[in-house]
Amino acid sequence: MRVMALQGLRGGTGTTSLLAALAESLTRAGHNVLCIDLDPRNQLRLHFNHPWQDDSGWAVAERADAAWHEMAFSLGDRLTFLPYGCEEGIAEPLEPDWREVAHVWSQRLAQLDPQRYDWILIDIPNHSALPRQMRNLASLWLTVVNADAACHALLAKHPIGVDEYLLINRFSPRSLLQNDLLAVWQRRHADWLVPCSIHQDEAMFEALAHKRSVLGHRSDSLASRDVQRLAAWLQTRGTAS
Amino acid sequence: MSLQDLIAPRLPPAQSKPDDDIRALVDNAGLGDFPYRNIHQQERLAADLERWPLLRELAGSPAETTA
Image (cartoon, rainbow over all chains, first blue to last red; front, top):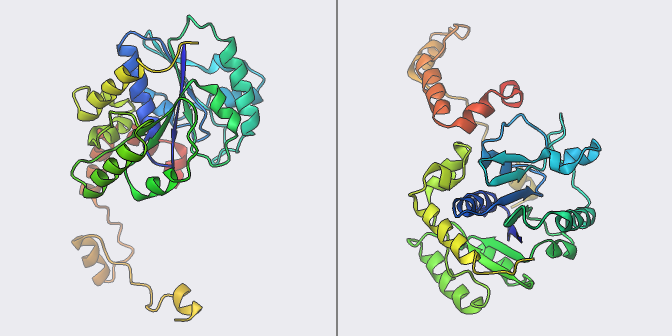
């Protein structure tokens, strides 16, 4: 069982859409995958055709004294996803105690049957105040960036963790700035930069509007092929626990 | 430049303009209460929403319908 966390270096890098696509790619490769949404915005479920009005999720279960795994949903034989949830009538989700979240989820992951899932993918919200303990949840950590000046500035102060990798999402080869940043990052961050980037692709945006991952929407798209390449690369990384 | 210049607009707010010719005609004729509905626009909006399942679903949600 490999546990991998995905987190955007800043908001809006397309991390959740990427996680959904990666999950589908791994299931198509024959792996059993559990996706956990730790983001209070509760968006991951929408990539898996989950009804908008269904507010159930693990955070809601906690407050209702229900078991967290009762809130998990299956999509096909191999994919299971666990929404964050949303309390009825609350537009803005309450900020959780992240230390508590890290503590609770490390216990839950340790209790899971390691034979049940080959991969656990965790959607981590972009949040500057996340405690260091969150890093212990996953044996692989994927930090998702866009090749832009904002991410470049943030990278300059970003502390790199053990088993952390940097992935460029929405890369546009036609952009002079993006090509220059890629060249700089390939030199400066060579030891943790993932060798395959995800190209900018309209299919990725269309996929969410269709309530699917990009692989489910258009498996022949450029982004889908990139994600499959990334999934193959990831399978060679990390250690099984 | 004073702080007031930064926070206060120099120009008065623009008058709202009609979004189509029929609406403009109704306004110019002083028939502001005329119950005009742009059917083409409504049909196009419905077709646009039909194309994208998530947009269609959100359009039917209470939050969107009351907005």
